[in-house]
Image (cartoon, one colour):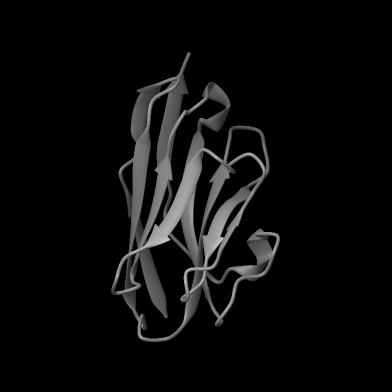
Amino acid sequence: QVQLVESGGGSVQAGGSLRLSCSASGSTYLNYCMAWFRQAPGKEREGVAAIDNDGYTIYADSAKGRFTISRGNAKNNLYLQMNSLKPEDTAMYYCAAYQRDYCYNPVREYDYSYWGQGIQVTVSS
């Protein structure tokens, strides 16, 4: 079992940056694939980026070149650095994880067993 708690969301103007954090607790000594998802009002939840224990990363096309996913040295912290933010990045962002040595590509909601409560990111034009 893993518990996930997101932090770092908020409001920013277009072109700005935000860094999301996710703190994992519980059975973090096991290998987990961890990811960020987002869901905008009226839209389905979509995978943004994922990272495995070895640091291998996967990005959605919408995130490539602007977002960077990373994990802390202890592997139980997850980050998403978001630069050059656009109004269309406005969404609830979720941290997610599942127990496996690697991450499936693409980043699909139904692969993930553990979810955080989500945190709001709002980008104004």
